[in-house]
Length: 145
Image (cartoon, rainbow, N blue to C red):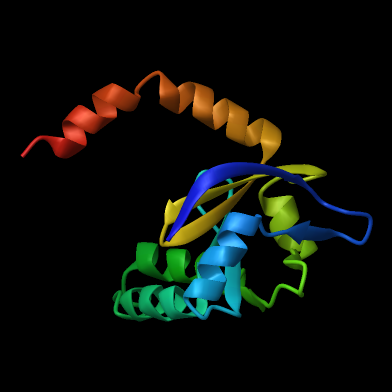
């Protein structure tokens, strides 16, 4: 549903704009509300409400008796908040999430099928450079049946 890579700045009022392709995809799928939270690799995850509920159900089923599950759930859910972009697609990312992802001004917003990721542009460039060099090797390992 969400695909591509887009560069957007955070405006004077602290708002980020959802790329028009993502707004179009959201409109086509009747998505008005999103959930943002701490992601992995120092980015912010953004889920449609439906996808959030799907992920929430999976994580709720993790055993709370396991330390790793408790830690993950605490970090993931305590960082979560819902956002509803305005008519121009703008929304505010809470400061604690911007701090978590080291976002200051310029972001890279990427579509990863069922979710959106929001990255600080420098962090994304570093991640991309590192990952690009091992992309084929990773694909071979993942696709090897």
